[in-house]
Length: 123
View: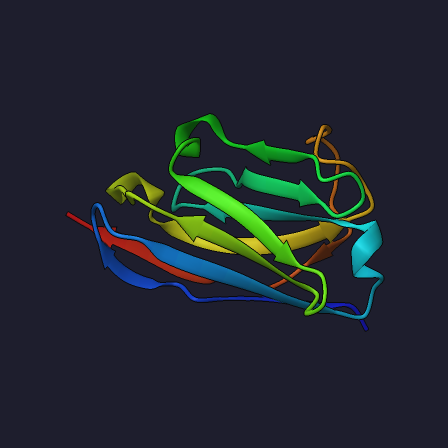
């Protein structure tokens, strides 16, 4: 069965850094895109970042550009979100997902989802 699990969240001070990991199994990793999503209380879920393992295309939410980066380790079927200069407004539950797509396209449903990890940024 397809599985995705995000981990690495926690409590961090504003201006600090944190790395989230997404461990996956049960699908052909090299043919899929991995996306990071977040949802804060009272807000809609939004796409934070995306990387496609097929063509290397990427996407970043405007509010995190220059602060967040994303990488993959194809040998481990894992993806990572590197978050720098964190702000209180980054506080949310972060989840990873997989879909057969390129990251030039952000709309539409994603095929597989994992449970999220809580990121809390304090002032």
